[in-house]
Length: 515
Image 1 (cartoon, rainbow, N blue to C red):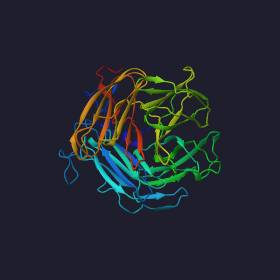
Image 2 (tube, rainbow, N blue to C red; image 1 turned 120 degrees about the vertical axis):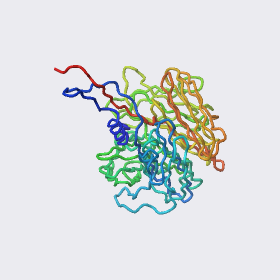
Image 3 (tube, rainbow, N blue to C red; image 1 turned 90 degrees about the vertical axis):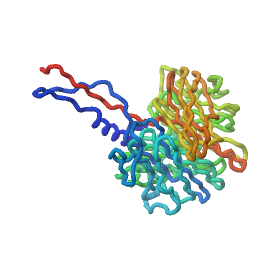
């Protein structure tokens, strides 16, 4: 996925206007600016989209909005008139209900009525999470934006608990930036699954989206998947099993693109036996895929991979653990044919230790880009819960996940190549507490799991921020476990670079004589 959002483009343009292209001209001279190395400056605007959390009457949803400190030197202050103390508009970060809900058939109805996040979920200052509760089936999709000092690194976590019923589970999702291209391995059209792809348009103009489905034999013949209209500030939930008349498939890869506009996209997956969770998009197609943070007590793990290009891929499958990198017994390789979804069962994979899966070319001279995701199950019998771990990119600058709890939070850090050093910060709590930071060294080819980094005097929930300091590439995820009546409910989110800064070209005066 390109992951370049209009908000970042707008931020770059605004910053360039302020910092980049002014030049001095001596009287009578024609002087051209000379470009120098670009600098990185904080973005001034960011946007996110959160899908409808649940249709269950029992659903309890918590939204946590957070901006890490240090994005700009400007304070996020403002009076009742909305202006800052220096006369500039105050920084804002808030969520609004989508105006309408559109079904897959194209019929539009008004936004659902009911208890929605009050006062919308708003960050008041960098460094402190703000939470808002919204319960029941009538909570709409939300779109939001952050400006000024609250934009760099702004994140919103949507966490829903459904204690019973066909959609029971702990459903966690980091609300995504709108984009034009998404890959979702590990979706399904099986009879026991209800998978909805949610398309949410945060913009003032309509978007048009296409959905492609790929099974083990290739493209699934489908209908109603081209030219799906997504009106401005609305959401379109599409049930995957209704898009194709072909035999139901356990493992399907979904490709979402837009012909015009942008959308936020995520798949809500509910298994009548295993539970439910959100399936977030995989990282961009790459020859190496890292899927971080598989729980140590996982009872079933299924790997699903797909090759978007024209060449087949022969992949080496490795598990990165606390003690190093190993090859799973009997599952050290996977052949993925071009345009076909491949899957691999990995029984007894983690054996009590948190680990990360790495897919790499069996022949380094033949790298083939792939996308991948894991379906992970914890528990046994009737007391099971499911979550998904998509491939995620390395953290290049900074990444944050909000809504962590004093108990049940596990941070997994994986260094695939050389040793890496990172700074991990647990923010102040939403209800009180003091932020704490720790420098963590992750040995090359290993996974480090942290469960004890909690703010001092914590009240409420907190955010975790990871910043690389030196060494090799680091991949990270957070598992949140909230047991319910014997069911080990959990959800896993990968850390995605927050792109809180943008490169802005600079110019300097060239005082040389022009020909």
